[in-house]
Image (tube, rainbow, N blue to C red; front, side):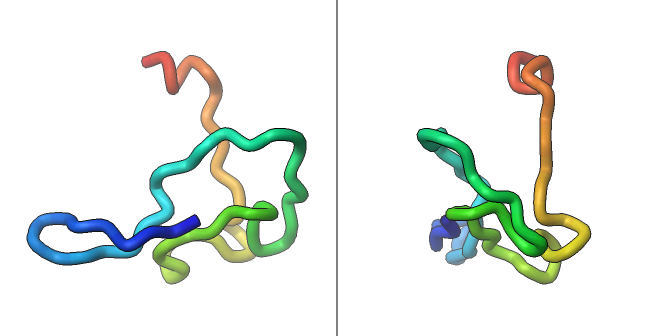
Length: 60
């Protein structure tokens, strides 16, 4: 879920840090169950609810 964090001398709200979860999650029209975005103007919504990276991207 989004958190307020200090960044470059100010506080910003971000959902950048994700953690593994047990079990599956429902992908709904606007979001993934149990997840949230810090900036709804630029993230989430009907055409941006899910971002997927392949394992090789994380290894890189």
